[in-house]
Length: 441
Image 1 (cartoon, helix red, strand yellow):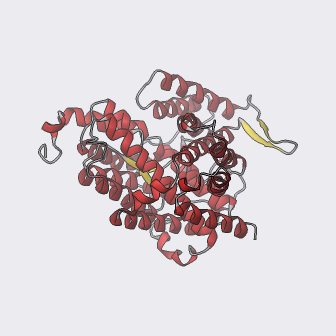
Image 2 (tube, rainbow, N blue to C red; image 1 turned 180 degrees about the vertical axis):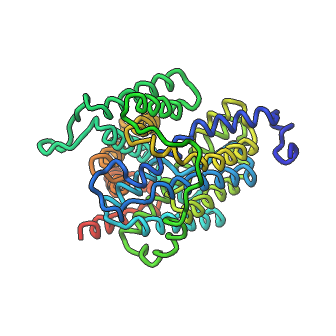
Image 3 (tube, rainbow, N blue to C red; image 1 turned 45 degrees about the horizontal axis):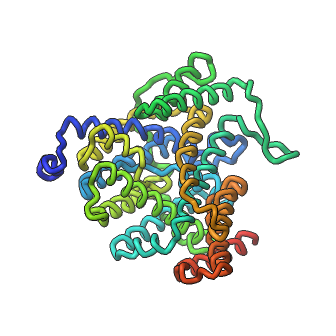
């Protein structure tokens, strides 16, 4: 075991790897409760039940997808990087695809499945790197920042801090309302923990908020903490039943969005965490193909079980900071996700007002990409700005990406920088023009 995970070469041991794996788990355990909350759209009242995914089934799918993804990454690629359904992609799945575009969640799951299969094919053929390199870095940063704003906006809505206002579209909600005050308390506590650089700050913030909610009667006390594993029956295998409905312009744009965002998340996370752990060799990531395969396979598994795109988590950096250096840490994280399956009764405690702070803080972390955009170059600033601002205002990640991919070739051509535009970007230009045309029908 030590030889396989290269403990001696990496200067690590079982104790360091276990502590690192545990730290990573605690840092990302919030997804067990946030993901079911988002995919079931529990914060949206008066929604037909057929539009909501089963919360308990999604909890089980989330835990198993995270466990299998982390185990694959640990055993096959041997990196201390854990996986779980991605933040941003789950919001895109629910609020853009299902709620905004009116696409049934069953069909949306098929889209996730197809994106995962394409991801595997691109990884095995080596074409993935070419596509990533074709998309300019400035647009990648804009997409990350835009998703951050979108997630934070959803969190502010769930908290009741921002509400509908017919006169000016949105406005400040009733901040004296009990559940909203609970969310504000949660934001303050989580911010304090994050400023103090407390590992698992987001998870601890949710826990403290839930406890305070129970104490003040704003959250119902669960009858039990440990229970039977919820059934996957409502979601398992549904993705395979609707594959014939994904071959439309709308769904192709949706699949491309799933694919692109997963591309960016995975590439960025792998390089960042591996660099932190001093695993980069000659500016290259060893076993990169295996790591990408583990990530894409996890998406296919997750879609089959019944959850949105599974991707690598930047929270793995917390585990690395705690001492993790090998894939054994990811194995530990994966096993802990399996054990978490028995804590489903806590779903009732983690209300939208309890999860809202997590969404807002994750949004803050993602918006940091704004600083990497070359705002002094107008031909870059325009597509970047339109990408970022459109996501929250149009309530659609796909629409934001489409705006950026359409305007980038236009501004760059007018500036005379045509040689910097990859041919793939012209193809994306046409696809997203068609996306807007068919979206209007």
